[in-house]
Image (cartoon, rainbow, N blue to C red; front, side, top):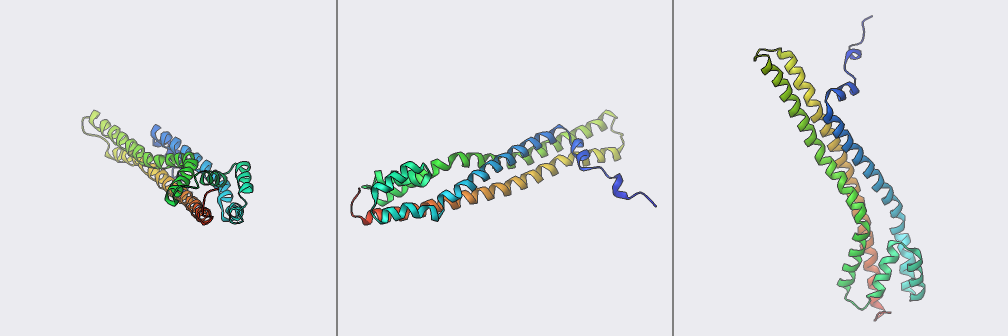
Length: 217
């Protein structure tokens, strides 16, 4: 019984090593991107419950019932983003509705800015990875042709083709990392935007109830 053909094929790790030092640089960017993605994902998962409609209802019900003192106490003691927005809107209740919406938006974006910054690094890593892969390929091809030149232009073209084939590993690896990180970035971006929309809805309803009182507290 013959040995299976696949048993003689290079393993994935062997191909990775054949790609050269650039492969380790791409790997470092992939680890950076994945670790930041996981960090932001966990933070967004924790924030999700704190900005959900069920959490908003407590603040809105107090305002609807005109229990402003209880609302202020809850907003100050909770220390969450909903409470922060509530405090700011109560503080500037005499401003126009558009100004209050802008104020709420500023507070929300400022709160999420660190997460947006980390998510942006995931995107940057996705864009750098294919460029590094292309750089590794160009360097590998250049080295292969240099060997032919040193041989006086008469070389083993099978070895040249094999060298070019190996050089392409970096581009393939870079593209795989890039696609993965880009998809993960889109997932993060969409989740952040959904939470910001929830906060906008909360601010709109809060402002509507505040203006219905006829005057600021």
